[in-house]
Length: 393
Image 1 (cartoon, rainbow, N blue to C red):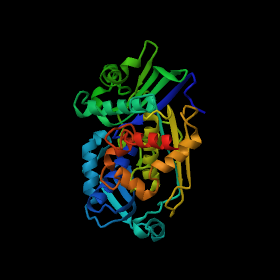
Image 2 (cartoon, rainbow, N blue to C red):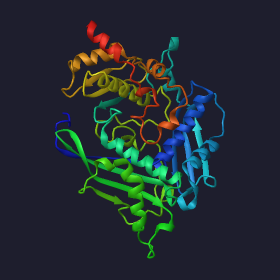
Image 3 (tube, one colour):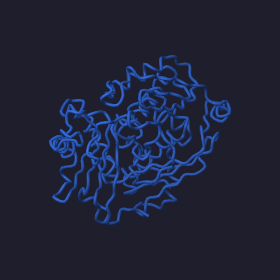
Image 4 (cartoon, helix red, strand yellow):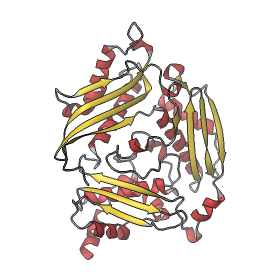
């Protein structure tokens, strides 16, 4: 059932690039990028763990690429801003442990096929979604949460609010009437900071700093949807002085809802970061979004959910499903058949069509994988073919 005809409040969250889980996602994807830059046929499943003073990079990697993993780690940490204990982590003095071994030959038996074909690197189900709530054809709450997180990082890096640290979270509650977003009801900001904005008793973030965060971070992003009844909370526990890996262990793959649709749409369960595109969690997740977005953009539906299902070692999907939530110009069965005819759904077809063997992945690992025009799966270039197939059927 669609939520498009409901009166409700819906909440989505995002996190900054300095959140420990996102720190790990970016390292895993930076390692993937370095492998692909040197060897586009690399097989990579890289996971990262970070805690106070320690960062561990491990996983299964089969590649001809040679590079210093610790340099990649330190470059990512320096770019984010983890350069001092006052932020909960100094990437230049922390211990970096590397524990990597080749991909299982049992998996390779199913992935590597004759004639350049590729079998799916795992079983699983992947979803893609699009709707008309925003120009990006994404749900509004997650897009606002991402923009708030980006604004929080920008205010820190541009020295607009120099006391901010890299760690942070955002959350937005949007009120819907008859399925349409009408106002923002609640904004939550968790902004890590140094001790220069602590009250004299050491218990709270100063009210002045909170006001600055509202003025410089919140209102520039969501001001048009805020009214006199909108509530904004900054640092709900009182302060956020102890932050980053010092207070929160990070792991790759723990922010899958932040990475996708903010809980508005369903999720198949597989994470993206650190995985090369033979892993259909990633390639089919991107393809499903590409399909759904093109269906909505060309006017075949106002809302679209696409599911792709795969079996390890098989080239073609075991299932293709389209749900237009009764907004489709043709039946969902017809749309599902159309998707099979128009879009390449084998692993090799998806990789080639979306150019997934290029080192683009570190950019995806913070602020969401969808709704960002720099990525190939956000292109709107399949509309003519979709309409031509509809006319010919």
